[in-house]
Length: 142
Image 1 (cartoon, one colour):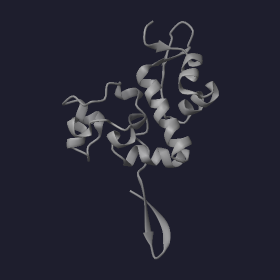
Image 2: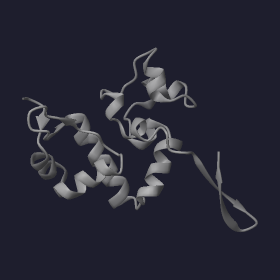
Image 3: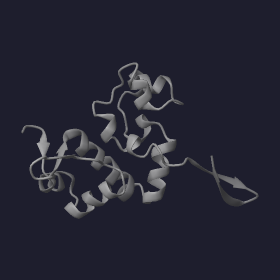
Image 4: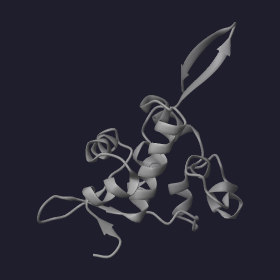
């Protein structure tokens, strides 16, 4: 199949081990399709882009898994995934609504399926705010 890859091909493309890619799946950051006959993971170009960005945020920007999960529920999709033209996206026009909700009504610039997007996969994570109070950092759960 054109544009669909097995985990060994994806590992080479993104420069990560197969184990690390499976960890991203276990953590709820990606959700590859499964081949019916063999149950092999099948990755699309969209999945590869998600893996690359998640890897970048963890390994280059220093996010922990917990911080990344919090980022996925707090920050807008165009910011997390580095959208090249956020102003042209319907999700950018309504930053306080979820991108998958907006997508039900209008098109967004995201070409991938919401059900396999890291933001959508983490939508039920409780939002947490970190703020300064009297010099000590405190955490508040909404």
